[in-house]
Image (cartoon, rainbow, N blue to C red; front, side, top):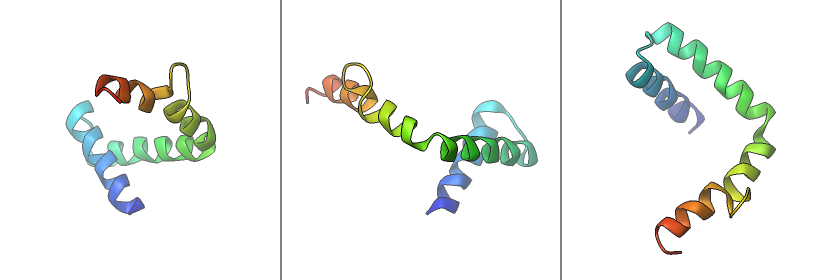
Length: 64
């Protein structure tokens, strides 16, 4: 599963940022390291945050 998500991140970096495979993989590794170091804060940002976090905002968008 992690390899699949990592591969998707590399693909997005190639498609959206115009990076070649090698540079996209380097950037994806930096992103993965950052996400690991800040996992707790990222989860809070998504689930809590002001006004229900990102998930709460999405729920409001869809009437939940």
